[in-house]
Image (cartoon, rainbow, N blue to C red):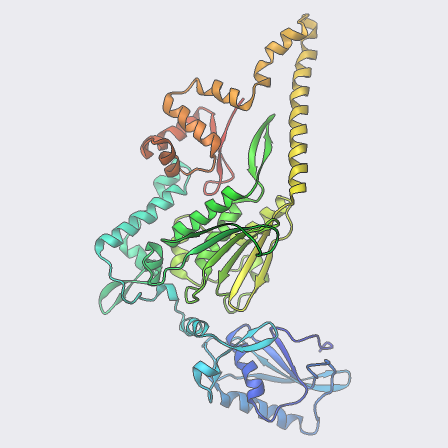
Amino acid sequence: MKMPEGESKRIEYKVAVPESSEKYMKTVVAFANTQGGRIVFGVDDKTLEVVGMDEETIFQTMDALTNAISDSCEPRIVPNVTMQSVGGKTLIVVEILPGMMRPYYIRSKGMVNGTFTRVAGTSRLVSREMLKELILEGQNRFFDSEPCEGLNVTDDDIANLCASLKETAVRNTVEEKDKLAVKDVTPNVLRSWGVLTEREGKIVPTHAFALLTGRMRFQPVTQCGIFKGTTRGYFVDRREFDGPIQDQMEAAYQYVREKINRGMRLVGVYRQDVYELPIASVRELIANAVVHRSYLEAGNIQVALFDDRLEVTSPGGLMTGVTIEQMKEGYSKPRNRALANAFAYMNLIEKWGSGIPNMIRDCKAYGLPDVEFKDFESAIRINMYRKTTQDTTQLTNQLEKTILSNQSDRVNANLDANMDSNLSKNEMLDANTDSNLSKNEMLEKLSAKLNSKEQVVLKTLEKEPTLTQTALSERTNISLGTIRRILPDLQKKGILRRKDGRRFGYWEIVIN
């Protein structure tokens, strides 16, 4: 065994075995309720000095520890008790594995007052909300799949939700062939997801149904705000979104998209708007917060934009048995199975945990600082850091210089290539008029070849390239059916193309 390091979430030191077993039994049940851990006897927890155990009575001590733990905990915990030698001194190591029958508690105190979890390097009494979650987890049940007491729904209510979910799924699908492949949602599908369940022979709604329809008794909201500087000292703007949670998620995403900076990038010799943050990852981040938060907690999701970062805080903290390192690797353990199924169907999240690794990768590709994860006792916070204003200004200036340089090189190359034809410089500049037209002029020239509705669609997408088909229909007052015909036609003509994926991408106008 190595020399001891400080106490942590999975290790605790005791200089000796206390006379009262309760002093270490809290740690035993806390380890069993979380990720497991070790209690090391024979190390001073304040100085980390290795003092060792009395070797003449060490075996009796080990037996006493084993019996005390087995007799004091409910459900029964069987520890692995061993001896380890450090610096010529013998220690007793009690290893507690993560339990499968949570919650574990001290029998003499009862479940409410005797259930503890491990937070950082301390063992803490669980809140009532956490206790409920541990009970459900120990029975392999999910809060969102439990019946929602007091909520009565009709067949029409169920049919409306089915239709709404499919409409959202189609809206988040770009390719026409993929839209046609979106399957209908039926009551049986909702039952398989856990949005509906059966009780006493009747189909009843679950908490997931209430959340997806905005009918939860205490329906949570999503709070969004912009702060001046890097602390919460001064609000610049704030909004609160209510209603069905999928609508809250979309509204919060649109809020962030509208408030962050937009730069530009080169497409040939032309400029194109690009957001300062990977916008698909922003959407995935907010969607994950909505799906994986604890709905037993009374708090709300908070989406805060500071000068240096986007901060998303989700009530409930990490699930037991899940670490930040595992999250970064793509490990996924759903807290709300029914909601995860519904959001995956609607193309709002990645089903198999790839959202976090993709976000980390995308931020690196943008040249942004590393994504930061913070695990609090009852919440988890993820920070996606922005580039500074100076960084953005330098990037924009560099892009502008590159554009001007490319345009100049293109004209000069054409002039040189045609000198042998005895064309004057003025004649050559006239011949290259198309190369020097502004983006708006090029767009007007391109629109002249289209019918009126196609022109409206093109001009609208030039201003708002991330619009969905439904949003585009609303913006232009053109029917959704016509929009679904126009977009593929413009793609076939080579005027429009889809970039950065079918779900969270954008429309790009091709100007040749």
